[in-house]
Amino acid sequence: MSFNRRRFLQKAGLSSAAAFASSLVQPAWSKALEKALLKAEQLPPDSLASDEDFWYYIQQSFTVSPSLINLNNGGVSPAPKTVQDAMKRYYDFSNEAPSYYMWRILDQGRETLRNNLANLAGCSAEEIAINRNSSEGLETIIFGLPLKEGDEVVASKQDYPNVVHAWQQREIRDKIKLVWVNLELPSEDEAYLVKSFVSAFTPKTKVVNITHIINWNGQILPVKKIAAEAHKRGIEVLVDGAHSFAHLDFKIPELGADYFASSLHKWLYAPIGSGVLYVRKEKIKNIYPLFASDDPFKDDIRKFEALGTRPFFIEQAIGKAIEFHEMIGAERKQKRLHYLKNYWMEKVKNIPKVKLHTSLDPSYGGAIGMISIEGKKPAELDAWLFNKHKIHTTTIVWENISGVRITPNVYTTTKNLDVLVEGITTFAKP
Image 1 (spheres, rainbow, N blue to C red):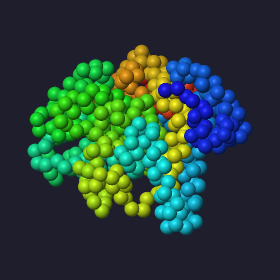
Image 2: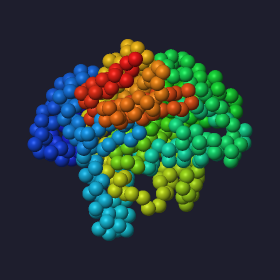
Image 3: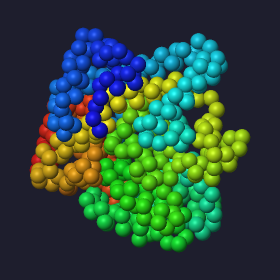
Image 4: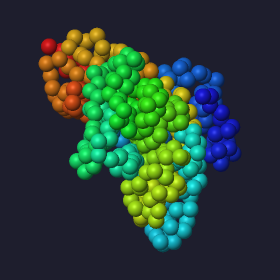
């Protein structure tokens, strides 16, 4: 997907790159950003992925702490300054007269935002609901599907805990049957990954739950092929896209998902507490909303937004996050994130006792990486990196996955990752 500077500026409502830069960054370096954007037009995404000068100017759009190297962006990502400023501005605006400015002014912007999210997702605006996070979206579907006693649902033991617990609750309440797939990861064997799900299907299977990028170690699953096999058997497909949306370069309908949910405060860099739910148009009428609406059987996607009073200032600032994402470009962003993960993994993979739990192949891994050290507990490496190098990571111990998850982002520099490599190297020494 090529980067069209003129089209982006027109969409952002700005007359020049300088005007955009001045709205994004401090004036002292706005001209440098403009030059970087112009240079980027001439370079393919693969080449730009390692261009530290370009990504330096992107880094300056964030307000990250200079005293801490944040490599846990897989949990939640910071937002760029323009998104922060928009949220604060909308919050102040709301407080001038909340019931007027929230409900009669800001709330009217949801349809424009819905259209913009739909364009990003590659679907109809009538298939997009705006909510608070992927858990809310996924649980809307999990608890809204008209399943009955004896119906089977196929899911993975490596799925996110909120999803696992939601399905378990449905099992208790409605006596559905859960069939668990236990994946051996990491894997670059597409046939194995597809077969793991398909072999669990039976004539009683009604739904398959697929995590697009597994949050624990960054494994990318072949959703499209699993979904195709499911649909051949009349099975509906629910996709957890918490880590894939605005991380990988794809459009939701390409996956073959009937339902898809994501957290926008991860890879879109929207305000914390913002999410999106996609429901294929013809499926909307069959799903009960998580929060009651006037008619639970209507085919209007808006029935999934009956939350009541909510933080409109957070919601409306999502628009700035979309602009920022489009400024970088989806393909360019994916290439950079994969480059950063591979940068540190390539440097430590041959160190004795180091074990990597994430693929270096872009078909099976993006920004998220996982590492463990033989003879050491994950928490020990996590503590070492923080205490000795002020690197923030997270410990993962879930089912058959154990290690330290390391997740850089577009504002992460290779100098940051050199510190990480040093920390891992010294920790792994006998």
